[in-house]
Length: 593
Image (cartoon, rainbow, N blue to C red):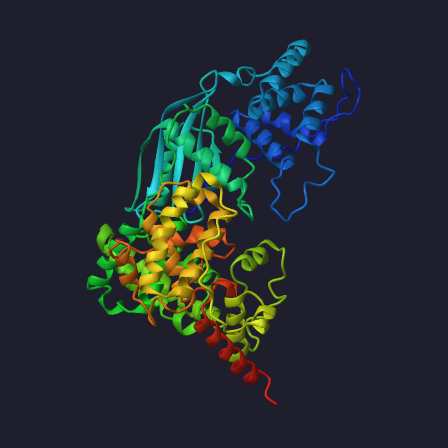
């Protein structure tokens, strides 16, 4: 839901009346004259929000939240403690007003008591609402405003100050970017007026408003703000994060004990059922082949692991994120394979909107987003680009996005170098590729040496299933590779085997990983449905269960179309022999004599 410049008059009101006064006592250093003028103007305003907004903006300015690659705030900005100390040293009505507001917005009991003692000794006449700011309270229920496509929610609630003046807080929570607070503003009017005007401005039949428990509103806003604080680059609007300290103060007035956003739970069986339901429907029948199943798994991964966690939720914004960024950055595969994604996405959107009962006009709008972003997507997948962690570092500015990757209009690398790079990923490095041999893996026993004693029983249960499955479906070399993977995963992340979960699912995931790495499971070997069936998993997918195992052995889990384990230790003689033959062929093509 887009934000418009509605009711923003009091977020940051610059004053134009400058006053240069001499402190009446403690002549250490006066506060900035411009700030004193702004405070005087805010105190003369007809609503308390003028001063509260000013103080909030001041706090936000001196407490920047740097990103992981940004330096801390410059030395010219005072700390919060230094700012408070300055105002304590300067005895003026304006600094007294600032101290009264700061003491409440910062929410620190020790500071609050110190400020109250100081203000009592000064004797300045301050507005009742400011002196009794600690008596502010929330009014009525909160209100949630959301759209049927679920890109985000506005959460709003009202606050009444001592003396009866009211203000309203609105926070926009973006679900596409991880359920984070992306924008917020505070207006000097009761909540019903804000809700009425917002709905009138939006004028959208698919946007609805409803009461929201105040405790739930408090938890949801707090969690969304906390996520936003660690998001890089940070979100900035004309009011955010300037009003964040004020919003956080108001949220602390809400009741505690509420419930935050609940992420949908999609287990392997539910995803498998959704996959088969789509492929059996008129929307997806033509896409029931290996490549499209692999791409559909990618769409489901995006839907469950990113955004609000709902694979049936598709909007124009979600489409843009998927095609403009997520697939090109996350999925390592060749362009012909990735080029099949837009057509599959159109069919899946139609299927999902049909199941959810979304209006045809919104479905058409979402499909139009696919049309809009498809040309750029096709250009991107055919161009060299940073992927995975490198793409994130490039976005953060830690790496030059043009550094190791040619610009988009440059000549792309030739086939030999592309294929050699894939072989390097399979074995881990250029030197490993050079030293590769095709001797068979030994019939190796399981290595218990680095596995914590408390998970021995659990690992032994998985090992028995792995041995039986790899022995019956694969071969002795694959069994050794599976044992190595299990041993290293258990040593690398023992928590995997301390959590609840079926041993059969873990065993199937291990055999699937080794089978895919050696091309003995999938199109060229044992069918995935036969592997999962052997472990009693039916048609369930084991891909989600493989991710923690891959992370535990230091391998990126986001792999599609293949399985690169970055080590020859997991590769059978047949697979290594094929890699050697491909290495020699592509090097000869790259470096003809």
